Length: 110
Image (cartoon, rainbow, N blue to C red; front, side, top):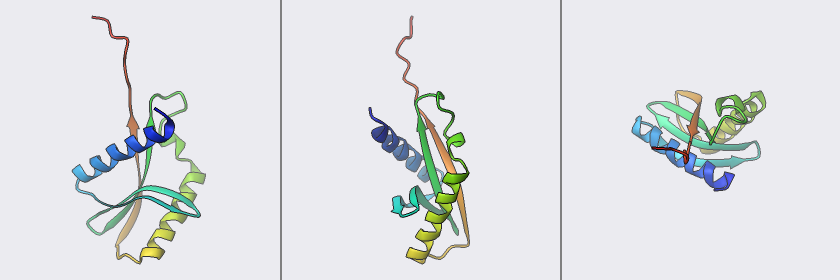
């Protein structure tokens, strides 16, 4: 499985998790000149901008660790772009990260 397919699978799981927790996903993969927001959702009066990081191990760090200052800056700009473009009403906006860890263990001995 290539990285793009792995990322899409992680985003599917993340969107399902958010919906199970009462979020309403309103947009996926929003692209603008500042970057991409994986999932945009609503929960009550909040608008949530979610970055999804899917990993098959921690060789390159955790998903949370990969959301650095530069990535956060791009997420904020992209969120501002989305809010300006759509003009949606909201009371609060916040950012969340969902880490998806996939381990396929093949060497189990019984």
